[in-house]
Length: 345
Ligand code: 13P
Image: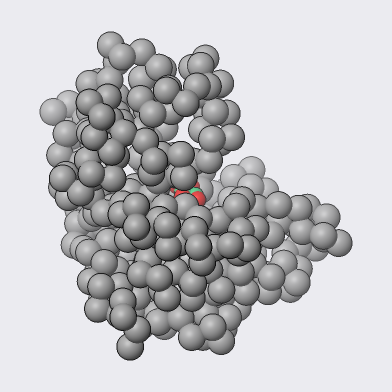
């Protein structure tokens, strides 16, 4: 038992509480700016702040969202009235989280593969984030499917980093979200994605075990087992759901506090329908199965906002709508009809 054991268990449970999921709004400045540029939004710190305020203050967000993952710039920012975003979140019942990885970089000696950086000085940074009010963290590893990749070396290096990050977080009071993302890019089959996801998760849990990470004090944020984006025949929803849950059941210890999927380039409707099917078809999984989406919650709201304050209320409505649909999916009560009905409210 560490000093933080009980707090970590409580936070982990709260993050995956029934009907709730996690909002990933931790795009780095680079990624956020790219999304702004596509829409002609000026890439200024003030615009990033305005956008994050729009998200955090969307009406009723905490009915559907347990916590939100912030970027380093955001956790230090404040609302227009001068209240820190952390304080805004605490007041609204949203648990503050923080992205702590340094991004996925080219993996030496392995063309087209990436390894996530950021372990140097992580202990000090994590302590600072705890003092700023963060109670959970995220580290994203990226695994690419291609002709002869992923290599065992890429999977192992990323799994090792994820495990060391998770141990550092738990030692300092932050619940680690362990995110090994198998990219959707490519024309791979569902079976190839299953094989790579299984190998990745197996290695991740081997390394987490080696580093002594407590499973009941962490959240796994996996990608779904899904056909590649450019494949001609996407697998039907029930196959994605079945293959994903079966793969997880084989690799993920039952004591893990929760599963919170990334959306990974799926459409809004796909991300909700897949999550929903898993909860309908597998109501008895050992862990809660929910979402930690970025694009599948935010993108339509960003498209509406476009940097114009006149669009804030409409954009917030769209954001809350996507959050409500994914909350329903985490309960197995999402339908396309419900999606349309909620959009009209
Ligand atoms: P997407 O839901 O857009 O894949 O983002 C989730 C995330 O946090 C990626 O690290």
